Image (cartoon, rainbow, N blue to C red; front, side, top):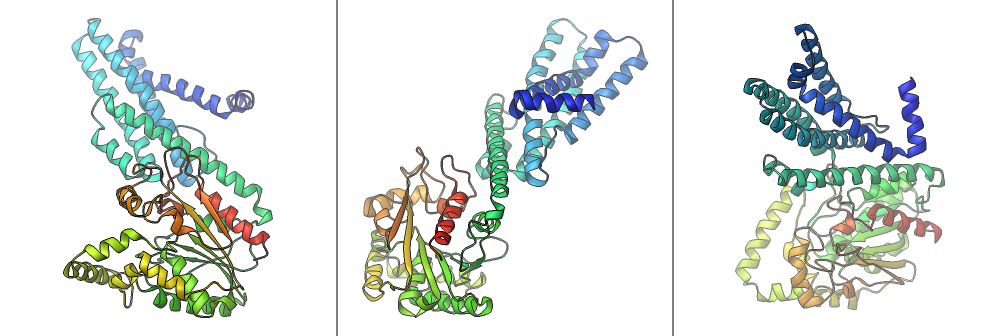
Length: 459
């Protein structure tokens, strides 16, 4: 109890971060002693019973440390990230010291058998610490991504490089833990306010070549963030690829279904990419404006992509048909009834959108607004947006990897998100595709603010 009270007092005086650093250092020293127990007992303890007892205590300490390395208020995924990062720090302290100590023991003329036994026991204990800490981080951290997981596995036994990678992985895990704990606290603090509880429910409409499925949410962490703040969410459930007119008819039927089943009179639409064009057509051409209060388009190519015009005009007919047939076959397996790859891509061209804009006019009954973002370079995002960025820039100018900023503008209000530093906010980042916490841009909080504004407008 005294130890616990001292710990809590230290947290109050020094702050949680400082106390945790001290705790890591102290437990790191204990881990160094435990992993070098064979050599230390031979040097400083007399009597077989005492040596056996000390070694047994060291083994027990390492096992307990691996199971419960630190105190964490959070359970589940965040608790595992916290404990994994804490244990990995202890591993780095212990492994660095152990290498130096074993070299020292060898140079001091200790018996080679004693040094060898000590090296083996230290290796086994350190390997256990590393494996459990890495297991926690690999299974729980979202921010490590595929790249850092792969680098960690490939360079695990290459000196210096593995330390650099581990330090970066720890930093990513610590930042993720801190960010998520702060978000939980923020959502709890405003839970009663229900800032996203709009008058009408939210209908989220996906873009081309994706579908709404239970296992993978197109919008990733965004809907959950909105729901925690009072929003009621529905999804378009339209086909992944077809013409704007055909998809719009599906959306019109979906809107009618929601309004009639919920008795909500209208919906607020938030649509990404081509979904914005599909929603505009449903509202402007199919009478959905009677049941839509607002339409917010996210990185939608309202004026199309000249890059798409170029590709369709230059690609041989046989090649286009072969690609289309493969896509359509794959899309049918994913649930599309009658996908049309060519029709979907054609409606995304600059010429195709010009025709859509000529026919489809905005309804005065609906509030229209748009959101746009962009990358600052080809390195400003993840694959494949960084690959397509340069091509789109050549034909269309400043873009998010697929759509130009000029093409995104539509409606009474346009929100342009300036990218933080050199990172950029890509076509994928704006829907949280990679679930990446981008420094300087909180995608979940942006949508919370967006929907909160709709509530303030009375929608």
